[in-house]
Image (cartoon, rainbow, N blue to C red; front, side, top):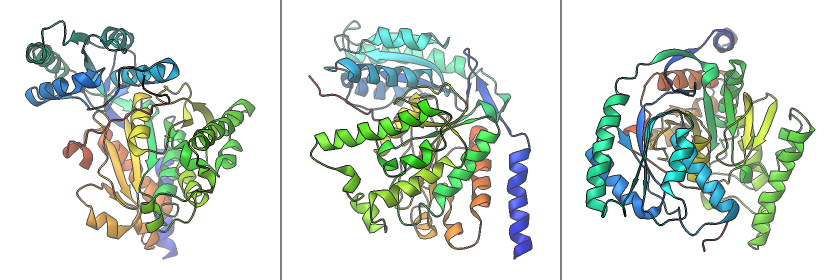
Amino acid sequence: MFITLKAKEEGVTRLFNEKLQFWGYRRPDGRVGVRNHVLILPTITCATQTAQRVTELVSGTVTFIHQHGCAQVGTDYDQTARTYAGMGMNPNVYGVIVLGLGCETHQAHRIGDEIAKCGKPVETVSIQEHGGTLQTIAEVAKIAVKMVQDASMVQRELCDFSELIVGTECGGSDACSGLSANPAVGRTSDMLVEHGGTAILAETTELIGAEHLLANRAANDSVAKKAYAVIKMMENRSIQMGVDIRTGNPSPGNIEGGLSSLEEKSLGAATKSGTTRLEEVIDYAERPTKKGLVWMDTPGHDIEQLTGMVAGGAQIVLFTSGRGTPTGSPIAPVIKISTNTPMFERMNENMDLDAGTIVDGKETVGEVGGRIMKEIQAVANGKLTKAEILKQHDFGIWRIGPTF
């Protein structure tokens, strides 16, 4: 048994040392995508159904349904605009058709102009200017056909793992999360950083009680102070709602899964960060400015944190779960990792990898981490995740202000 485990760990060590590469799509701004989508981006909820009709007509296009884009002001407006632009600028997107109604707060041409700065093809269409939804669907479909055809001519090229930004999150946690899948993702995070890539840690809500562990690994005092600051701001938001989140229990599903307190959940969630230095703490939907481990300030809400990381440039997301989840993204493949084998077998059509083998004593944390790393490589090369196959195109923006 010792020889077997030693051999497995030596295999993981080789992953640290060997040069890992994948075949990606080089974009005009130099970044690399692992997918080649044409995004129909609705800047207002009123345009989402029109965008959906276009994706039904034109293969190779994706979109998302949302309820945002109007009656927003101040920092809430800015954050939503940053998220829209970030989705369009994500390197998994070849080109974008920005679709607006015409009278909304988030004007389509402003979002289009921001996305165009990265050099990719961008077109802007207004429903009101085109005389209604039917004529708009026809116009957008014509543009989309040409854009998809152009996208199909782009060839993949060999790229290093240093080009990757991988988001990490956990949802529907259970008592095994902090023992199996999350530590394994942490090991993967360490390997990615070792190869020059970037790993995003999110879920500020679910790091409350473990913030000191991350602050102690901060690159400098400024990063450490911001780690404590975002935790404090998240706590203050809950207090304003009449709840002290630090003394509260996790969600009903977490409790049923065996978690007793927020601190217990946070200690497990923090293990996704691995052991490397925390390079920076960034705002929601903001692009990392440094390589290595990065903390993005997001809520614990699965779809909102996923959207924030993808808008921040993550080409792939690792999502651990003990209860099971179908969650996916319209433009980034989401690799779902189970914390226990019974759930993996029960929800096999939604889950991609099983880390319950750690709990069962069949694999080490390091070995599963290496297996996840290999899965990242396969997905980056084109392997479809379960969420992609099932068209699980989830999208939600973290709103930080009231609607007016």
